Length: 192
Image 1 (tube, rainbow, N blue to C red):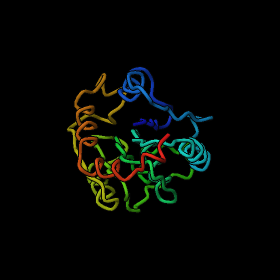
Image 2 (image 1 turned 90 degrees about the vertical axis):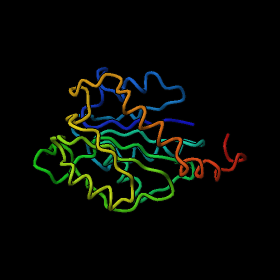
Image 3 (image 1 turned 180 degrees about the vertical axis):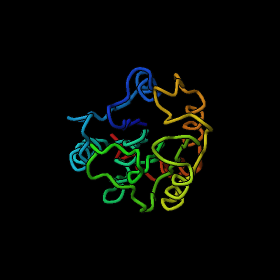
């Protein structure tokens, strides 16, 4: 299985659990963007579409913050038979007062995330989105939600290190029946 990492604004540095996981994950892809400081949804979306069109094996999305919104934007208009799961951490409220104004064109899609398993992970004191708002988004998307307590934006400043509790949530998602069913329907003949 391939693991595709989608970081948020500014990218995820060495103190971020997401970068630490990526550095220790075989068969992983980090989506790079031309401009990490002034994200433009259409440009980032184009970069994601290009990256995912080259994937021809079962894959999991591991997204943080604006990377989650990017993924929901992609999922609103795109599909991949190889996508088996999405692990979405610290989904921000794009209409919230703390949402970075330099991020252009991003919306919190309320379209259903179907055809793959998805888990949204939320902190109870995230400055970029209240847990109540994340609950609404999660319900509208048809995803599962796990609240992990007061962890801020679940980023490098949260001092989570490798974040073993998050790793356990990802493993739980990957062992779910929904993921097993998705993998079963990917024909071995189409997987190179």
